[in-house]
Image (cartoon, rainbow, N blue to C red; front, side, top):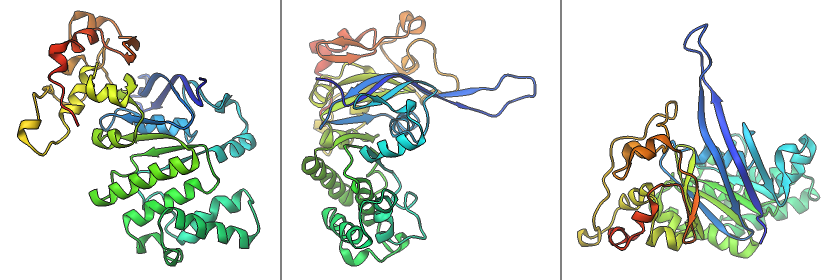
Length: 334
């Protein structure tokens, strides 16, 4: 089966201010040689700590930023090769839901205008047809039509995120990238928005890239999981495999950090060793080696390739040891 969304050796560097007049300009490598495929109709969960590069990768997918290296293709079309007019037409097929429901909406526009903006930009019908479509979208996302004449500051975070989702699906896209779409919401509202996204995906046949730092959220929505650390994908597998038999030590520590309600269910915890290194000066070899209890000299000298081990793609020199029965018994289930 061919991939609907394909990333090949994608990288993104951000230039930084010079430290001195004659010193070379430094670069922050936010995304480092990422290759992955997303198949039509599936949900890929992209997970990692804050600062790992997952939001930068999300912005590259929807072409809010251009990659420094590599290619992003949607349905066989490389997006970077499109001119401005062709890219605008291609954007009908992919949209984004942002983390902050207030910051992502124009504070000077009412909800009705925000949802209908894309419909007007693409001239999808007469003014009356667009108004009818806006009200239909509001009902589709569970937003009362009486709220359409309110400004964002007059609405709750959950209501604003429903507006953002309605705007995203207005043109019937095929791909939605949700960047931490529930992290800014109350827990009870998070569940409502997650269930809404899952329902819309089933009704519309959407392909979904769901970005989150929360493993429990990823477990609820994703078919497959890509684990990211300091700009690199370190593990890629089905959700069941990642949560039942994680093959990378970073994945294990993320699972161990998930709160559990009863002490007896917590199991053995994988210890963290300090904070994430600065992306300005990442460790040589395996980026995770400075925090990993399994690190050896090979991890210092050699960058681990993303390789297949029993159906899981893992970038770790010692993945086989982590998949042993003894190591598997220490996994904390979510």
